[in-house]
Length: 271
Image (cartoon, rainbow, N blue to C red; front, side):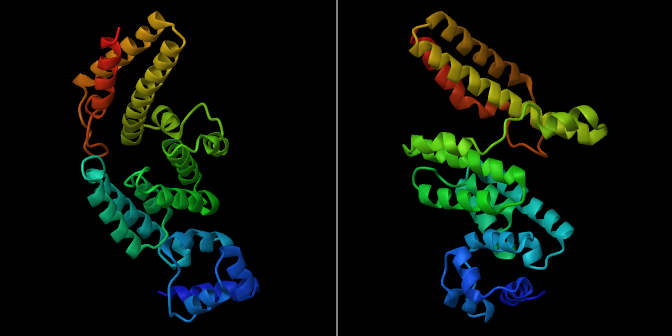
């Protein structure tokens, strides 16, 4: 496998640009680029997607990886991290960091890494990583997820004026890939998509009912608000009979909604 510095140099020369021009695009000194190309240092991991984007290639291509094999290995790394994401985010982060040592700048691993970082205590890191992915990834699902996380981080840290402009980047779509796969495919592929979309839809519905109820409460429409909270409670309770499909999840909707159950209970108790 060709060394990263040699690859960058080769791509830069193919594009017929100077180290200065390349460095200006990345916001670094030309001396830094020179050190990369000579093999003295490596670019920071968060810069890898931007470098790949500049040359119009994927991060895997930048490292001359076998794309199909890398996709399998990356998926395995992310699957392993998911096992710890809820209960031990530090371990999930460690697994992903190790994965980045093998596949520096991989968009999928970086996207998963965002789920392990606390928005309050590590806001600067979250914001930087989100902006890097939004600007450089060629994967729309990664880009729009990074937009969502960035907007949530801004809100969490009192930067409300930046929330809407960030969300405006995301297009309005009234169907999902999973919905179509569940409806139009057959067998295990349809089943997997249906299970994943079922959980996503249920969790979204619960959240929307709570949000709508709180707004109605603020407007003094108590009866309507209580109806929303009660529906949300019923949705959660309905999933008490569900099972964990361990290939893709570590908890049911009912188990995952434990905090919402407490919140709804408190909201109903107030009335």
